[in-house]
Image 1: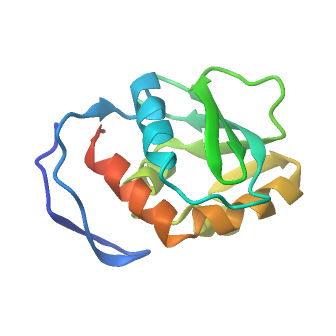
Image 2 (image 1 turned 135 degrees about the vertical axis):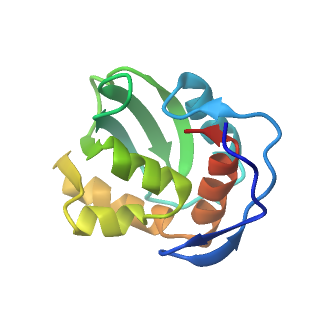
Image 3 (image 1 turned 120 degrees about the vertical axis):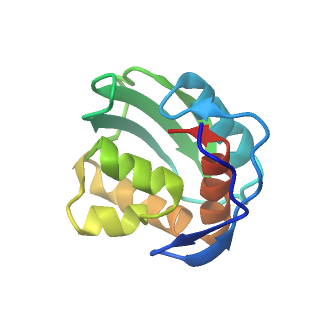
Length: 151
């Protein structure tokens, strides 16, 4: 477990407050996905930010990790480990990039533009999610989740 920090410096966002963690969850676990869902409930509705997304994280310590998330107007619905046969798009990325995104050190949209996140499927859905993932509310949630995550 990493030591708690009250602030972090992120190349993407600069110095940012980070709450002290109480309990931690393991990165890329079902508990981590459940934590995301709980915190995402506080995000404002974003009409049009709707997609079923499959994630494939390669090079993780325990091997490839596959999970899915369903977004409806900026709200996180279903999420779980494994595959979503109804996914409209798939994000494929290396563990190191997934971790940097989860820690708030790498902006997901920048990683996409740099080719560090490979996307297949409906590119219109990718564009629909970009305002969500670039919002200050989303960034604050990412940092709060990271503070409670054991990498």
